[in-house]
Amino acid sequence: MRAILNILFFLLMFSSCSEDGQLEQKFQEGTFTGTFQRDLGDSEIANITLTFAGNRWSGTGDYPKYPALCRGTYSINGNKITFQNECAWTAEFDWTLILSGEYNLTKTGSVLEFSRDYRSANSDTYIDQYRLTKD
Image 1: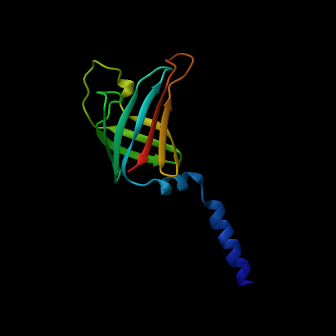
Image 2: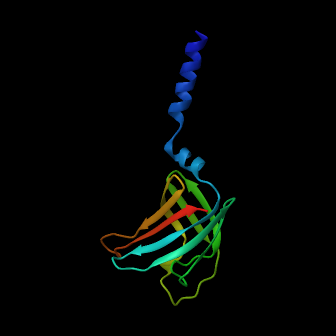
Image 3: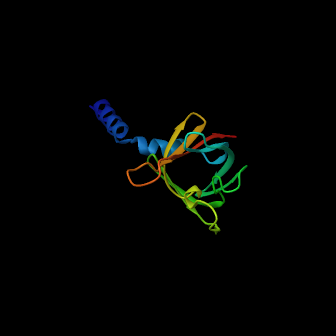
């Protein structure tokens, strides 16, 4: 009887684990390097570095303000990562390039990818894509 209860307990615990929690557990802090591209067909690919520590992030890239990286906080909820950017920005560039807001998040092995889809009937048609590998 005890064995049956143990099996039921194990099955209950296993079935209550969600993929959302699994992604959060798989995410490892540290320094990631990779690329950013605003998918407009023939757009530039920027080399970037992002560092995650605690709930804080910081980043740099090889093109000024493409994307607009600096520093801030982040949180993960399921397959979404939300960035808060703490830096002051000037007005001479497209502020949608600022790493801020909610992005779809996937992690496969050591590759971390997040993207935001701006396509809609009444806005620009592009996708911001970040593809990073842990150093």
